[in-house]
Length: 80
Image (cartoon, rainbow, N blue to C red; front, side, top):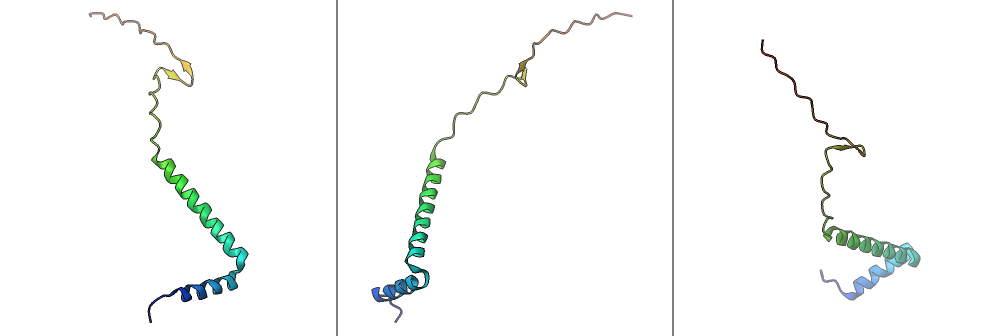
């Protein structure tokens, strides 16, 4: 009582095969395998180091057109 023997697993397997059929069980196992592969691939992608950060853009370049810095004329101060 309380112990699970091989005969219990065989009975459960036979019941599952009768309920779902052989095609459904193999299809389900294929889907599980695809999910595991997809999960492993996602985990491998997370472990790769992120690409190097790009240099900050030149503040003088806006929308691909370079702006030239023109010196401002000096204001003449008058004494009153």
